[in-house]
Amino acid sequence: MFAKKIVAGAALLALAAAAQAQVKVYGMLDMSVGSFRDFSYDSDLDILSKGESTTAVQSGAMQTSFIGFAGSEDLGGGLKAEFVLESFIGGDTGSNITNLASSAGFWSRGSYVALSGAFGKVALGQYDNPMFVLGLAYNPFGTSMTFSPTMVSYYSLAGFALPSLGYDTGWVNSVTYESPVFSGFQLTAQFAPKENSADGDDVKNHFALGASYNAGPLSLMAAYTNSGASGQGYFARQKNFGLGASYDFGVAKLQGQYSIVKDTTGGADDKAKFFQIGASVPVSAAGVVLVSYGQTKYESGDASEGKLKQFSLGYDHTLSKRTDAYIALTNKKITDLGSVNTFAVGLRHNF
Image (cartoon, rainbow, N blue to C red; front, side, top):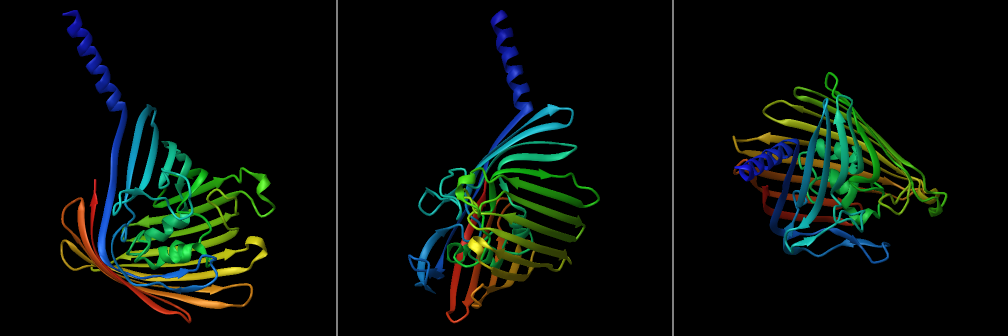
């Protein structure tokens, strides 16, 4: 009898602990097959040219595949502790892939611990940057590094060789504060110290500000970042600004963005001025047509100029609460280089 009481007591303690600390495993796999073609630089990043068209099975055309672990604990008094560890996945080969600016983290999609309560949320570690949040929230192709003109302009083109965001989607070594939502308004502040003064005079601390407003069908956001190269996820000295807006009319959701990237690394005076307009149009209970056009104008200190223009069209069909299929095509055109096309059919599954 005594042994049974001990077992019963242990079971109750385990249930109580489980109620207090919740841990989940989650993620998403995106696989597609299609014809892929893009622009690329030579090994010295001097000559930009059109690559060859390749028929391939790829992971992450619409959204980068990943796996994540997250947990939370109720600390009482309205206070909660939480953590997130997320890793990118190359589903086509089974490999782990890091994001473009990070050469080392296995948990390169997200890695932080946080406290939240009535005051808002404070996170320590690698956390999404407000410019990235603005970029994904106000274009119909979200975080697609292939089909979203926003993500291509911000991150993908030629591995950052042209003026683009001088940091990755998440800021490493950062402290992030998110305020509670007041009448639809929310503020975000982010700070990351340079940590290593030996990197030179062009290195400085990094900070970012974001402000958003959401009320029914209307959504607005502004973001500002001030960053400097440090060799730890921040590789250009920049002052960047962005605006985003969307309105859901029911028959269509219209989205727009405008941003300026100003790069002063090593005394340079380079700019990239970007805009994007797009729409998500429901055509059935399960199907949505996606359309987006974006244009980036590059201006450098040596007076050279050029434009990147991208048009994308897609259709996304919901198969269940966790699975959808899509078909999409995109055309990219760069001044004096002509255009390239990519077409893919894919399946995306959340777990």
